[in-house]
Amino acid sequence: PTLTALTASPIWCLHPGTVEAICEVLTASLQASQLAAASMIPELINAVVSMFGTHPHPGCLQCFATAVEIFGPTHTEAQQGTECGSARAVLEGALPRMCEVVAKRIEEAGGAKAPQVADLVRAVGDLAHTLVMFAPHVMCS
Image 1 (tube, rainbow, N blue to C red):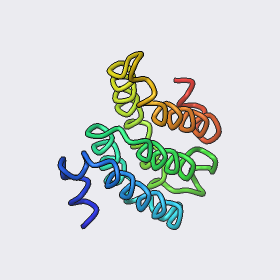
Image 2 (cartoon, rainbow, N blue to C red; image 1 turned 90 degrees about the vertical axis):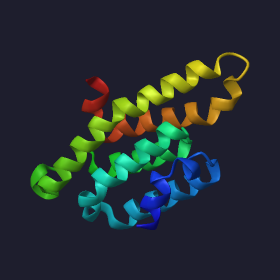
Image 3 (cartoon, rainbow, N blue to C red; image 1 turned 30 degrees about the vertical axis):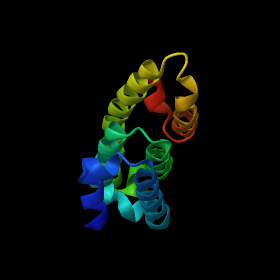
Image 4 (cartoon, rainbow, N blue to C red; image 1 turned 120 degrees about the vertical axis):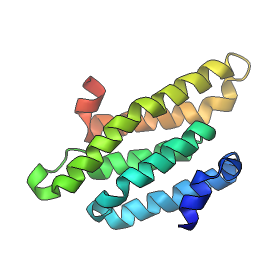
């Protein structure tokens, strides 16, 4: 509940340190819970996408990448169950929204401000690598 209040607050989501801390907690939660976190993916991903829309912090992309690693199609549907399939669908649906934010941010940065988005561009590269490794069908669609 506390994290939900923070992720829903546009005031807190404007502070890079807060966004980074929230993303670290969410990423650690995913890593600890693994497949058991499937039921919380819709809420978690919506929070990450919302925060990312307010302040495109690279930590949001890292959290997203962690979810892709866990719920990517590396296991059969029988091993993961339908909740994991639903989690995968939520991730695939959120990816275009995150890409739109990145594209807008890079466009806004332009030439002189390009160093300001270097960490974001690096995080996009890391996410693309994760997608190729754990959800290649997403990169091909």
